Image (cartoon, rainbow, N blue to C red):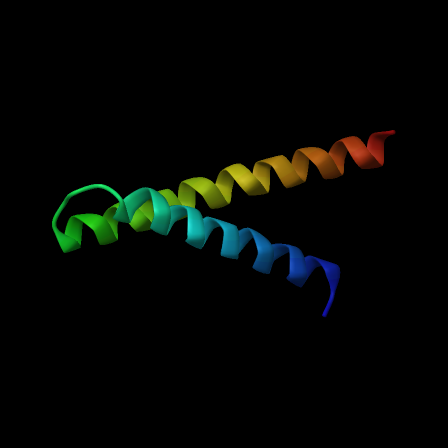
Length: 62
């Protein structure tokens, strides 16, 4: 397995666990919780990808 695939799987796993934890601890109806999970999942995924891209840029620059 390449490093890229392993990194993307790690980002996906952390986003899924974080999205589940953030959405399912709040009292709401099931459809609302599912929509909150999807929103938190993508928010966490994009933030992590931005951090990884920034770290890669800095690593290659210096």
